[in-house]
Image 1 (cartoon, rainbow, N blue to C red):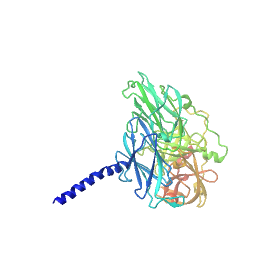
Image 2: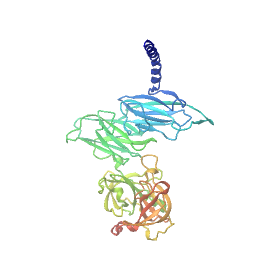
Image 3: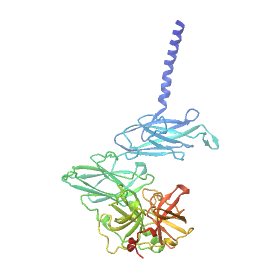
Image 4: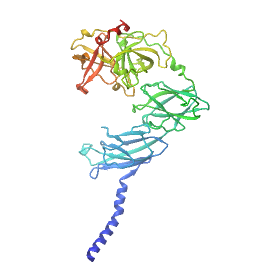
Length: 491
């Protein structure tokens, strides 16, 4: 019995002696990242394939940028809020591209939203075999990890009716903050975004610089780049006087700098520079006429493409492009026209739905005013497509499709795209006969132009069957256009 007790005491002493070592090893597995500094690390794959770090997000931090560099092998980053990572299938953020090194930006507008508190970061090697460095397998991978924090600094204090230029930067979470002082006894003020080729949105907070999609006071959010927001008193009295903070951001794209201009003031109408409508450039040939006649249609629930079919502004598109969230006709439709092949179309006009046919998925629109409701110039003359005969279309015939697919740009809006292919066949359904094609069609192409080699409009791209290289596109032929619409077309 005494011998047994002695063994227990010795074991307890040994365990007590080893505990500090185990505690030191455990503590050393989580390293703290200090904003603005770079830590060096290495993965010894003979021991484990990851290293864990933490960083703190303070209340005045708007965005955090993590930059993993210097690795000669494919390393990934996994980030989780509030607790150590137990599974890479259950994290908040992942940076796991095919690049050897990764970069990720978390912000108050990212998904999920950056929150105050502690974040855990794993730098991990996920492949099953050891990496090859300089033609030999290695088990140790060095790397560097840097964390940068960006505060919600005010770019500028806006003065009434003054236009200020700005830039959204990827490393700053594609957002910029501006301030605007509202005096006492103010009923409303207006904010306008212009001079941008991106899909810009607005969040406004009263007396608070950091706003999120969960904690804003006012929002200006649409599929337009030229965003406008009029802030009024909800009780028909006066707005609270004081400083209003305006967050300008792009929640779609995050890879390239985006320029814009912002104007705030106390007038109900937009600045005169935004209200003027320049005449459209005259096409120089048939191909340019087709490019200029292809417009972007931005509705309440989505956007797509459209075809100008008359010189006074009638547009043919798909019904599913212009219906609202309740499958009813959208009341707010904007039209962007093509001025440059290398930039997204310019948002200039408003249109109304003249008629629509859900069975054939077609809609007829008419441009009625400028983007801000201003009258159209008397001299404006729209380009338009000549209407071809889809009854003469044959299998194997070359065709082209014009439109504004979402995959056609590097930012949140795209320039016009042309794809080519052939008529692959025909398909008769309850809705009518479709033209089949192998021509590339993507989201946003709907409502665009299908043209023959003479640049005549012969159909509208409507449906995609299959995916990737096996896709077949379905085209609604112009023969499906309701006969009563023909009187609106230029012949």
